[in-house]
Image (cartoon, rainbow, N blue to C red; front, side, top):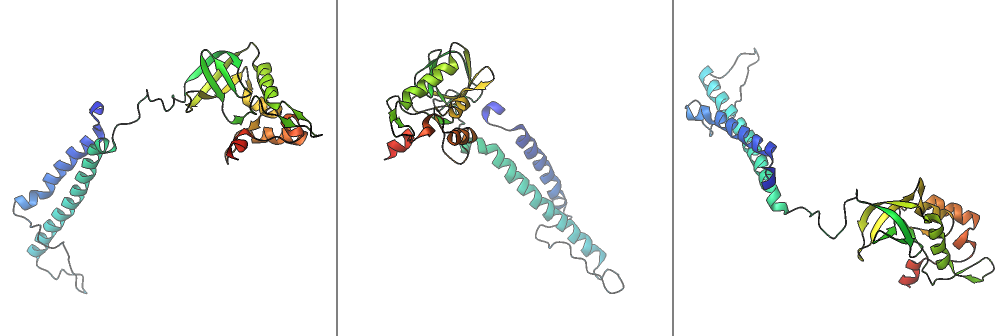
Length: 240
């Protein structure tokens, strides 16, 4: 059933609801009650004695029970029917073959070739290090004396030095618009992105829940790399 969008629990609940509905209307079919009769309302006098006749109370009891059960069962049937048709109304789920991005469990492993300060090529795949932003290859920064230096090329060299000839293991989280894999990558027990930020080679990502904020704060305080003078994020330069 699950391949057709049916839920076994919903089907079972509907069957039980239908059976209970039959039990609920049984007194009406047997002539013991009427759905038009009011709910049972017994009144007692000051001495605790029933002020209505016994047969009237019994009729009202049966009618009240029938209406109460019927109401509960109708609600159960509506809920069960809703569960049954929900898969059709919500449409098909996302395909596992969708180009929007691979499953979070996908991994890439192999030797890496640094292309920029935050992009590598591994086994024919381009991998972007998640949570960081590297200066562009031709970007320059200013040192503490205001002199320009090639911080973009320096970021590339820093990534080359960390990866070396080691085997890189990357856990892919998604794919960007260019088809590149965005991933957290490790060389041994070292997080590559965190190491680059700590060295002052690249910027930590922006946002409220950004990664590597503490590593960037340490690099800033120590005036390492891009923090020795003035440096501009590539994303900020693009927005101007």
